[in-house]
Length: 200
Picture 1: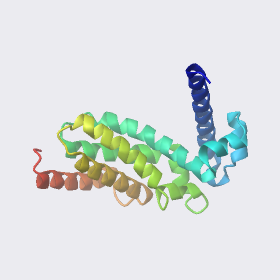
Picture 2: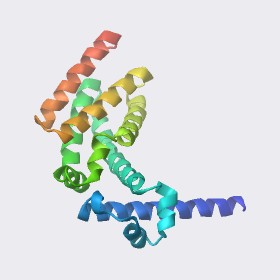
Picture 3: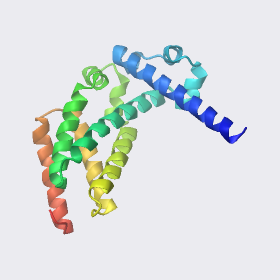
Picture 4: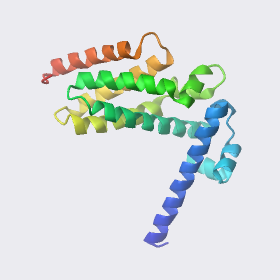
């Protein structure tokens, strides 16, 4: 196969993957991930069941990919918010508060949290959240490197990981307002920066 042929094949595969994710997210928002059927998603996306299995492994792999995609869109919004602040603690507080508000209004997240007993996608925010945590943390570190180049990579990773885990925790179990939860994270970040000798 020529380089041009390989490129066209890659584009077709990418297009098929996006169609499957579109269909899965749309259908999951309607019925919940527990009631999602791979065959139905394949039909909606215009691909074979085998194509879905080849790309995502199984239904949980598909659910995981949908969750990561939703997370990625959320981080896009957070990036804009973070860029509005020069102070890292202020940015973290503002970004986490925004994340909690936007995530709580996201249709699939709303449905997932409302159906804790019968929707297996809740695992993607609790016991099997590794893919979501990794995706969000990676993106946040990339953003942090651009906005705060003076920060050590290890410190950015520490902050991004904690911010992601705290956001998911507060989203699943709301005990205070987004602003109150975010203020706690900002306090921790400020203490870390002082202990490391950064200028605040």
